[in-house]
Length: 408
Image (cartoon, rainbow, N blue to C red; front, side, top):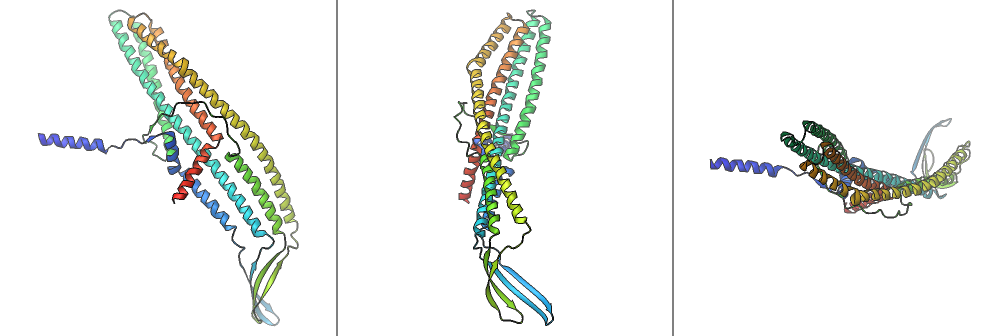
């Protein structure tokens, strides 16, 4: 018998220790996890490196040309081999490097723009999942309160203090809060699945989300010139300028060296003079198109500046309003709802309040508690939107990328 008890204890202990606790995440840890595990964010690191490699290609000299020309003449067959290397003394290589650097900046700006958006979506998913779980827990507490209310009403009906109609009212209210719990459970499951997708976890994985810090007033807006949208539009404009300059330089004369090998002659070395002669207007039309495109990008750059200034100011105003709303619930509305709930409980137990008064007080308190949670969630969503407009998430991604590059 003793051996059986020991074996049972070992099995139970091994089962308990074999269970893995769900991972815990703060919002900062969730963002770090997303940068390490999310496929879309990991792909941005590869795009960043690819843009750097593409810029290095432009630093190389122009390719060595090999011309082999067989011929059939009146004197018989012949062939000629020319190996040529253009020196690009007209500045074509430097122009090509400038264009490549501009395109690299454009690619980097696009990557930062996507990273800023993806990380902000991750933060929003975190807050939606966190407060959906808190709303579900609130609904569970309301079900327990409704069950306790129904049990007390039944006792009072049995002793004749209340009519049987009050019990029916309490049963209906219990079913209502159960339906609310069911809806909150579905919402919590779906928001958690969305967060798991951003974190690179299984859809059904359980996670524990830690409460954020106490809300505080948002800081004044910073400079908008570091926003990825501005950097991206500015890079597009500079890229067009560099491409237009490169097209102009490519039409200038150039000098190269060559080695000539001919079948019936001695090999020799010489110079090549390259001079565009007739391009049938293609280069001129291309320059006109690039000038028009550059002017259009300049207009877009100005529009982006005004839009970012407006969006940043609006995001700050919305964050301030969300904080004031949360503060009003915490300072005034929520404490009153708690007092109302306590008074209703006293009136229920003493029989001084009707069932309709008790249920209405419970509904009001429940609604206020839900509104307080929704106000807190709205604050953190507004703070996330504000941080996105200030490019805080892009800066976070860039720091993490630079640290990862140094560690490699």
